[in-house]
Length: 181
Image 1 (cartoon, rainbow, N blue to C red):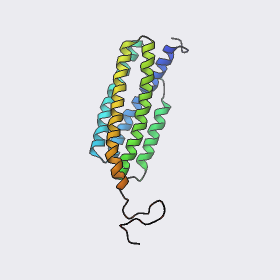
Image 2 (cartoon, rainbow, N blue to C red):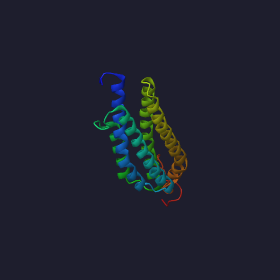
Image 3 (cartoon, rainbow, N blue to C red):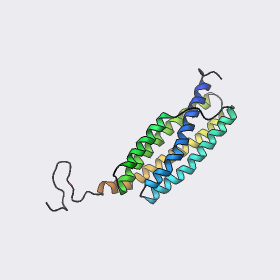
Image 4 (tube, rainbow, N blue to C red):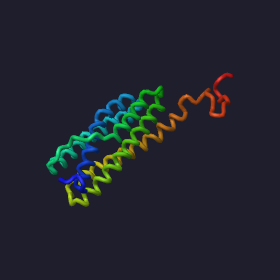
């Protein structure tokens, strides 16, 4: 296969997202452990199961192409996971930690949505309808996960905005009610 072809680019992009998904299988359990909301923890655990399915679909595509899955490191996902790890090392607690985890997770989802959207377009152009169907299935799951995270964030972000606000200084330096001066 010629590297300087759409097929070559397609395989390269498949390897990139394959490595991204493999990295994610290691990061999601850590995110679940750091979550304080049971619903968020369950969401990370459920997405881990889905991610394992994404890896299997990609392996089916590589097998059909007669190509190996490995050989590329996804530096984009590596950076997103590093940012997520930094969040987990912060002193955030409770709903604030969960809000930070959702933020990190949505960055990952948006990255994956962009990658799978591109791969679907490439598969269509290359006449790989079976690949496109597998990739669209994954793309839809990534979109659903992003939507679930958005739904969860409404409640969690609201609770986080109230967490620790009583008796603290507001940004203008004035004391808020609830704390003796």
